[in-house]
Image (cartoon, rainbow, N blue to C red; front, side, top):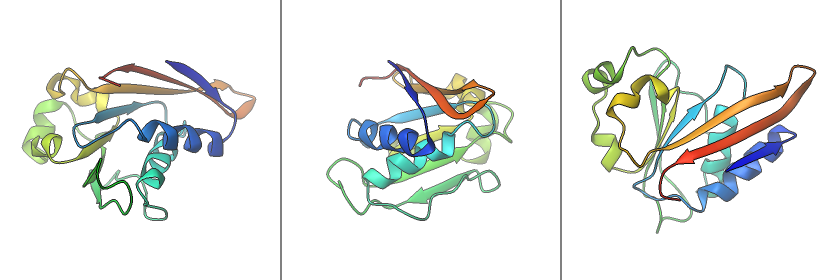
Length: 147
């Protein structure tokens, strides 16, 4: 699946709609250059689950944990990772551990770094800036998973 969005709000709204397909077993890798909209995408997913203002990139904490306020029948915890500062899957296992993968919805920015330890049904989402002159236009490509 591939779509184009033309604003941050469109990217967030697409993520909100996409979140309807997710559950406690979903693992999503968000890939894209700095500033392409990975955290914006996460905000759209979080909004679907009733989390409005608390979403930020966990660059220095590595993981942020959120408790959904809506759609609790689908997801009971959301874990938002930023693995940019890790070296590989082994580093992730030693630093954080993989128990999160069985405890709620996992969204991993820069997850390609730990691809070697991710389950085979992981959903890969790549966000790219389409045009250096049109700062808000993005292509969102979704691969893998069971959606």
